Amino acid sequence: MSTAMTKVVQSSRTSRIAGLVAIVLILALLSAAGWADRGTLSLLMEFFCYLALAEMWNLLAGFAGIVSLGQQAFLGLGGYALFFAALRLGWNPLEAFLLAGVAGAIIAVPSALVVFRLHGAYLAIGTWVLAEVLRLIFSEVPSLGAGSGISLPVKFAKSVHLGGMHRDAVLYLAALALALITILASYLLLRSQRGLALTAIRDNELGARSSGVRIFSVKLMVFAATGLGTGFTGALLYLAKLRISPLAAFDVNWTSYMIFMVVIGGVGTLEGPIVGTLVYFILRQYLADLGSWYLIILGVVAVTVMLRLPMGIWGTVARKYDISLFPTRRRVLFDQDKPTTPGVAASSAETTA
Amino acid sequence: MEVLRIENLKKSFGAIKVADAVNLSIAKGEAVGIIGPNGAGKTSLFNLISGNLAPDAGKIYLLGKDVTAMGAEMRCRAGIGRTYQIPQPFSGMTVFENCLVAATSGAGKSERASYDNCAEVLREMHLLAKANVLAGSLTLLERKALEVARALCSEPRVLLLDEIAGGLTTAEASELVETLRGVHTRGVAIVWIEHIVHALVAVVNRLVVIDFGAKVMEGDPAEVMASAEVKRIYMGMEAHDAA
Ligand SMILES: Nc1ncnc2c1ncn2[C@@H]1O[C@H](COP(=O)(O)OP(=O)(O)OP(=O)(O)O)[C@@H](O)[C@H]1O
Ligand SMILES: [Mg+2]
Image (cartoon, rainbow over all chains, first blue to last red; front, top):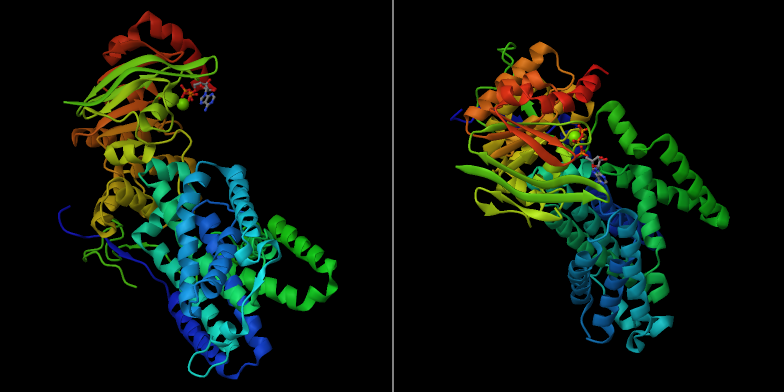
């Protein structure tokens, strides 16, 4: 065949309706910076930070097959990079924030060279060890408060503002942007040609390797990108907390929550982590007063979902009704006029968005 | 022109020798069949050639270039396509997308530039009607066909086929034979492991017999099949086919 004949599309009606709803929702969320009270804003800020973290862990574990237990390494590193830039370099909040993300991405590359030699449970433990090593290192740095941690000066916190907006509103908007950019970037990645390779790795690493997918470089790209995003998120979370300590910043619980949200929502889909983060925050809002019962309930919810809905809440719904808010699937359009020779529609190849 | 050369290839798993100083040369456009009893080391030989397994000793050359140190993904890109005896589909992707992965990553083409070829390969493998179906929902036979389609989409110079005809009816097997003859005439060298010998000998021009990791015989398919040695080894295999 010399001319392009096969017509392929990559969209669905659900995506257009979802797109409209998303725009309305995003506008409403943006406006919240103007009218919501400080308590609501800081809760929403935390929500979007967690959402970004969940989406990134999903990209790592759900797609690239890197089941990391050590994402707190990048989160803590981002937090500490921000404090270091603010306290020791005298940088302004924006500069310090940018450093945090870059630090996460830069550390991710040599870490990957070590960690990617491991597989399965060993890889998970390897990443955890990496985070523990960082925790021990930061516990030994007196200029950053060593083991007991360090606070940001009030002056620095006050310097976080944007056109007269209060700090809480600025941090909320930054978290919202972080979550939206994470989701949008993941979506564009998955729709792209590289996304084909990444999804192939998700489904079958052996098959992907034998189809010429450069596993290492795809994984490295994902690991570095999530290192960047997790670093940013860590910086934002600790900019809001104003105090950082090695024990809290490099706590493996950070990754436990990411896993909880992704597994509950549905691993390997972009919608899953959104559902999972909502479930997590709803449980936390209503049950956190119950003390240790809260953790027990979280555990029961996790186990129940894993046993009854192994694909997670979204994964199960999506399969049952065949819906997707972020469609990436390519569909060959068959020529309706010639049902006897299906397959090749007589129009040029195009991809509609 | 020599497409693939294997020199003195050795591999053991503990006491089991799966490749015992194997030498093999495959010319452009040649189709070679590999037979041998269960556990003889046929799949292991493919794993060594495709880079899924590192040899203990020996060399592998593709188009005169030493690829022994290359990883599996680079060997695919260099022109070694393979199927798996147990199919390895991308279950959550459509049949068409499975092919696109091989076309973009393996053949190094842009996505759009590979649409037509992927559709054509799927038509050849009788999978075009299933192009938009998730690979995970295919039957075993369809999955085997998809293995071949995907390997073809990576545009290999040499295609390694590991038991793709098992379970086919006689009519389906002869269609497969026709398709492979077509692939073969386009200049792709084929190495085909198959227990369904009548399908195999309809395509290949040389037959290699492997037992205990060693090449015990090689030559014209009819002569090899008639030899006393193969008849002896074959007693077990026919019993297996009947089971
Ligand atoms: N990764 C491995 N580790 C240990 N032993 C292995 C491994 N892979 C294969 N073997 C063993 O090597 C021997 C050869 O296996 P192989 O799969 O190559 O046989 P085969 O000729 O393809 O057989 P079949 O006709 O059943 O497909 C078998 O005894 C098998 O159990
Ligand atoms: Mg085998």
